[in-house]
Amino acid sequence: MDLVGIRALPQRPELERERELGLGLRLRLRSLRLERSGWLFKATRLVNPFFALLDPEFAHNLGVSAAARGWVPREKRPDPAILGLEVWGRKFSNPIGLAAGFDKNAEAVEGLLGLGFGFVEVGSVTPIPQEGNPKPRIFRLRNEGAIINRCGFNSEGIVVVAKRLGAQHGKRKMEETSSSSSLPKDGTKQGGKAGPGILGVNIGKNKTSEDAAADYVQGVHTLSQYADYLVINISSPNTPGLRKLQGRKQLKDLVKKVQAARDEMQWAEEGPPPLLVKIAPDLTKQDLEDIAAVALALRLDGLIISNTTVSRPDPVSRNPLAQEAGGLSGKPLFDMSTNVLKEMYMLTRGRIPLIGCGGVSSGEDAYNKIRAGATLVQLYTAFAYGGPALIPQMKAELAECLEKDGFASVQEAIGADCR
Image 1 (cartoon, rainbow, N blue to C red):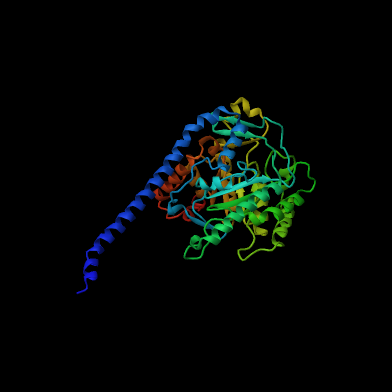
Image 2: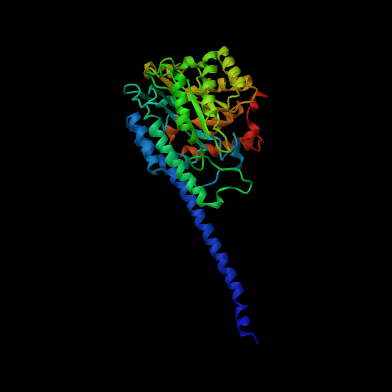
């Protein structure tokens, strides 16, 4: 008789129970990690009053430093499936991104993407380092949920930013090489060149430069290899003469030169990064028609709508700080920028991806931008006030809005108010 075999039989149920217990323990530990992640995001609200006491620019720099050092929560919970979408051949886990202006010098890309943004845009980056305008240059209008800034493209320059992005890009490549599980079964690449989310690089011109096109071309040559998409910023109100580049002829000439500079570079199979232009909200109907015509004729990859405004709509006009020069961002910009977004969506007949930016402070705001024609949405001022806790809250609200109105995806809702 095979006594060994007889002894082995009763052990099988025990082994299965041990496996089940092990699996249950792993699931419970994962659940605890996810709960901890949610708690950490909520806990960040406790420091918001402290930041409110600080000088605005000092508080901003402190926030960037915290993200750069990993002193911010990291989102471990998966995004709702309804928020996922594909744009420019890239899969976004959600359409909510951080606008340019927060991480001007690409110091905190990994930490910011780790907060759960679908994408992060760094910059604006200028070819040569420049200090920007004199301080103070950032002013809080807390009651209005707004900020006025006249920073003026303060930048460490493309060389410093290229080194940072290059290091991040190298780290990402090493992770992909060491992990065979980084690609899904369908072969579509998840995330972008800097990590789990998509990275945009916003390029500006130097204040004293007499050749704007040369500045943007230099930025493309130096930084495009690290970008999932590129942005030409021609709409900041704080650089003299910059907004003149939004004219039909000027814009056409500029885009042609920048596209040529990008396309002459050597690119792998995935091709060059998409090229977008960021425009102002303070444009006439004729201006918008001209920009739409150029975008369609030159097959521009996208538009960001919009930058800050030089106007002071109510209730900002009654605030003493309204007299400060600079661009206004935040809640008072929402209606103006959304109207421009909707107009541009109709002018381009929905053929060009649009990023809605300006006054977004909730998931419902993001949803209304999408219904007005935005494929993706950005925020900045609301993040400055609300901190990391705002991000998961917005994603949950956006998913709820989509489901409530019967949409199965973000893609289905794009331009719903324009049909």
